[in-house]
Amino acid sequence: MSVLDADAPELDLAGHSFVVRGPSALKGTLGVSGAKNSVLKLMAATLLAEGTYRISNVPRITDVGLMAELLRAIGCEVAVYSPGATGAADAFSSSAETVCSPDATGAADAFSSSAEDVCSPGATGAADAFSSSAEDVCSPGATGAADAFSSSAEDAGGSLVIDVPAQIEPVAPRNIVDRFRASIVVLGPMLARCGKAVVALPGGDDFGHRPIDMHLQGLARLGVESETVDGYVHARAQELRGDTIRLDFPSVGATENLLMAAVRAAGTTVIDNAAREPEVVDLCEFLVKMGARIQGAGSSTLTIEGVEDVERFGPADHCVVGDRIVAATYLAAVGIASGEITVTGVNPDHLAVLCGKLADMGMEVSVDDRSISAAVSSRLSSAKFSTLPYPGVATDLKPLLVALLATTDGVGSVTENLFAERFRYVDDLRAMGADIRIDSHHVVIEGTGRLSAARVKAHDIRAGAALVIAGVGAQGETVVSDAHHIARGYDDLAGKLRSLGADVSLSRS
Ligand code: EPU
Image 1: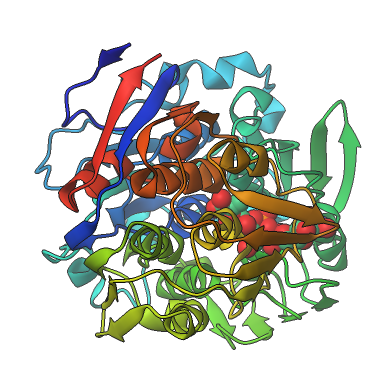
Image 2: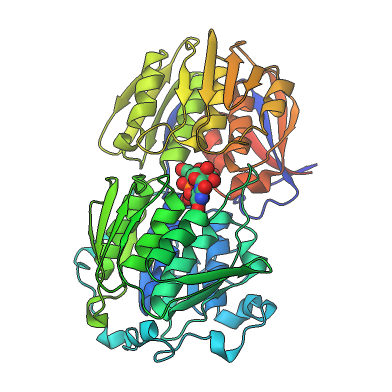
């Protein structure tokens, strides 16, 4: 193995491993950047209207590069800037070129699109509504948008400038979509913009079957006809018209897709049993800046009055909401390794349930407007967790909590209520000495105190991060292979843990 430069960005980490030498107590302050699960949806939302968008507090993660590649395939220009960059485009694109025209990536070519796939003004009723030039577009609510773009010192992220042209090609090709689940959220905005869309069925994390039936059923209520042929969803609507949609489950992705279709539909759409996650609220705020009329953001009922007048819909600037899951990762890390840390750039309200539970376990937790401080001086006691839609404990935290409970005092459990098969990291934690039993969708963990080092593998973003933080508290050298999974959602995990005193590096396997 060759160790990379300590400052090397964690981007294309294919063939790399995290090497963690523990145990180390953690001490210090670190900033988290914007949420992966928000920025990817904001990027998709730009497809709704022609013009230039600026998004700040953007995490340096590979999924942002993938979404940039997808937007380019659809016809947009996307420039990605590192934190502090003043103009030179660079950074976390998955392609070498960060500012490029749609055909520069070759992605569009890979999918044989016909001229018909190009969404031009006049091509459909929906596209007519978008036949304005950049000059014609006004951006209601854009006051303060410039402020949002000038990121404060606390913003740990980079930025994006997205130019959406007058014509887009509403086709999301398999070679990109296959690589990340969030790609499905281009379906709603492309339908709203063009009245038609072709989207490959999404890939993404490997934790079980992840259907999109709620997306398609909800869109059908808005007048969308769809069929799936050879792994592609072909969707079309003569006209999107508002209706009442009751989701069987508060799906984050379905809520977002329906929102982005409904903002341009004729009449009023009500989404009942909508997802309430902060990232959905962030998307609502962005859409409102663009001119959408949305009520109820953050509640279970979203009421969207469609804006058909193109003059009232246009580009906006936005600062991405802080990543609560990444912030929680560092809280779990200090729970495992002990020490005293402050995590900035996150709204503590977004982790209220988790912080309450951690305090019950013995962690000293205090919060400020945009930060959470946590101190751990002795072994925490165990607890029972259940993953639930927001405001409950997020399913994404499950592997992190299982890693934490492996070190606490007593028997703890985590009950998974969202993704039935999210258990693949358990064998890896067992290899590190954890005592874990799986009983249906419950994980029961007998805390064993300190774990020991092992060679393990990241199966998905959060499972991989859980193994890295387990390694920080473990005795010896832990090697977590398949680091590229972690880089999909964590902005410089190794560097940030090092800034807290942990011994974490990246190696080429
Ligand atoms: N579901 C359906 N049908 C659908 C949609 C969802 O049955 O049409 C089910 C899913 O199979 C799952 C449950 O509903 O059992 C929840 O899925 P949801 O749609 O809420 O999840 P998602 O939108 O696909 C987002 C995040 C996930 C996070 C979940 C739950 C993004 C890109 N992903 O996924 O984040 O776990 O919400 O909060 O926003 C991660 O960041 O590592 C990650 C996986």
